[in-house]
Each structure stands twice: as structure tokens, then as C-alpha cells.
Length: 101
Image (cartoon, rainbow, N blue to C red; front, top):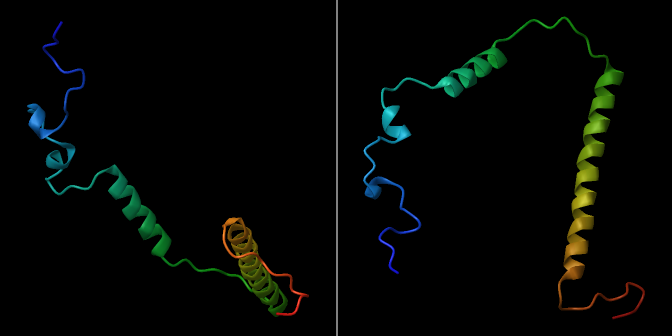
């Protein structure tokens, strides 16, 4: 038995589709709903609002300490992960630090 149609039909411009693509229908230059939402959020984020607040030196110091601790923790975590991945690779065996060269 021979089939007359292919089990998988191609999709796209060569398939005889007469419907225009989505990109072709938006050629009017009007932004979509997502574009409007992004524009509104950017505008709201960039409009300055007065902040009647005070950060004392102790609070500022605490913020700097937390930021420094976060950076150091991230660096040490990456170092540990790198050494673990490096240890999984075949090749040169790791020497013990206490043995002389």
C-alpha cells in the first residue's frame, strides 16, 4: 500500500499557507500590550520620589559588611565547586601538600 500524503506536513511559507505571519500583522508600528507594560514600569521606576529617611553610620556599616560577606561567600563557593569539578576530570593526580616535590 502506498500513502498519498506524507505523515508530517511541512509548516511555513512553502506549505501553501495564505495566512500572514504574526510579524507581518504587527507592521503598523503600534506597540503590543507587553511593550506598553514595559514602558509604564520603566517610567514608574525612573520617576524620582522624595524619601524622608535617614541611614545612620551603623546601618551603613552593616549593609557594607553584609555585601562583603555575600561576595566572599560566593567566591569561596565557586572555588569549592571548581575544585570538585576539577577533581572529577581524569588526568594528573593531585599531590599531597605535605610531600616534598
